[in-house]
Amino acid sequence: MLEAFGLSDSGCVRTNNEDSYLLDPVRDLYLVADGMGGAQAGEHASKLAVDTVADECRKAEEPSAEALLHAFEEANRRVLQAANGDPTLFGMGTTLTAAWRLGNEMLLANVGDSRAYVLIEGQLHTITDDQTWVNEVGRKLGIGELALRTHPMRHVLTMAIGVGDALRVQSYAIPLLPGAEFLLCSDGLHGVVEPPVLQEILGDKRNLEAKSHSLIDAARKAGGPDNITVVILRVAE
Image 1 (cartoon, helix red, strand yellow):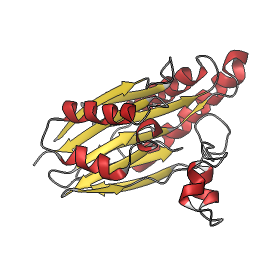
Image 2 (spheres, helix red, strand yellow):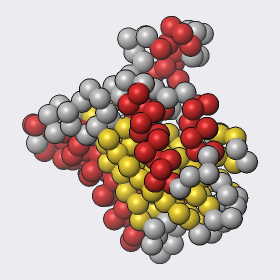
Image 3 (cartoon, rainbow, N blue to C red):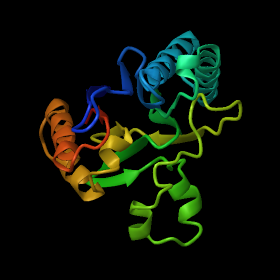
Image 4 (cartoon, helix red, strand yellow):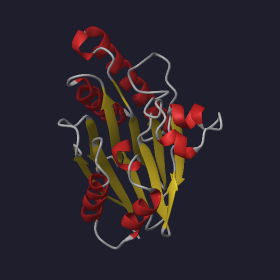
């Protein structure tokens, strides 16, 4: 059995919120998306991607890695189609991270740099790999972490939903251990709050709602330069 809670905040700088998230406890499906694009395009992209994945997963006979991959591909097709069909939406796209329970495992998939973590026995582990210039190019070039923090390419994604026909979806299967907690979040959280702080907040004994508010507060106290979205899942003891 999973307990879940989600929360989103515009942050301290932006006036609109381009993030979207979804909690579907009936199907144990959970999503976080971080949209990008001018005007309202980012908001449209993230919501369209989340709604599409939810619809496609609901059509599946049962959870599977193949069904989740198909849902991501359909989300990519629909966002790309919408962007190409409306000049005001041209260039929009979104990250997308999903968690879908399959028996005693959690299926996870992601595109972009919204992340999934798992806290097991008090230790926080990063599950997903960021599809960013920093992670896939900068580090391989040997650029130091300090320089990467201020590098002009630090916000560039190497993959996103809705920006092209080719799509690289990363997928994972993680055992559902009793007491484990999963965190899905946009880079408005992980990009400004250090992992030890995330671990400390997730590791305390409060309920998921209180932890979610603490995570949002930590990002805002660190400047809140971007929208902040968190979804926390707890596996029953």
